[in-house]
Amino acid sequence: MSLSHIVLLSGRSIELTKLRMSSTYAGMLEGYPCKRINDMVVRGLQREAERTLSSVPVHLVPPSCAYPDQTAGAFGPVEVLPAVACIGAFGSPAVAPELDPVLHRSALTLIWFQPVPAVPSEEHADLALRSIRWEELAQDYEL
Image 1 (cartoon, rainbow, N blue to C red):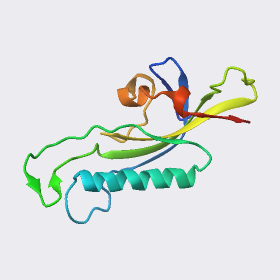
Image 2: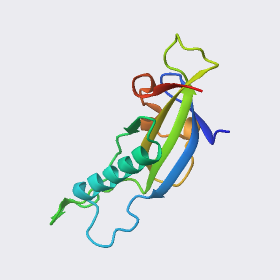
Image 3: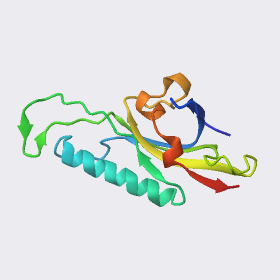
Image 4: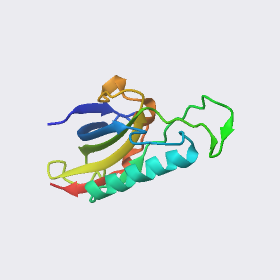
């Protein structure tokens, strides 16, 4: 059973089968959101995704950042990622046309950020998420 379906801009339908959401800056005890902190957050999510879903390629959907304060502190300007960090496992029919569609599927793990804790679906999925190049990034596998 899938949690949701998303139709990519390419027209391919993908289904979300696993989802992990967390607060982007959960556990941040000191400092402020900046490029250095954001890079650590993203690296941590990538390591987690690669560790838990090791047989599937992982792709980071480029996040959009906000710059609410133009004054730079000790670590540079304030740079804020959206509030919710997501890791999702997605599946779709096989990419390679020569593969048997009954026996093969394709898979990709995506990391993305969104402003609210909602399951992305159909028209409510962020444009950056719907813009991924599935055919280039996903991996085919046999059932």
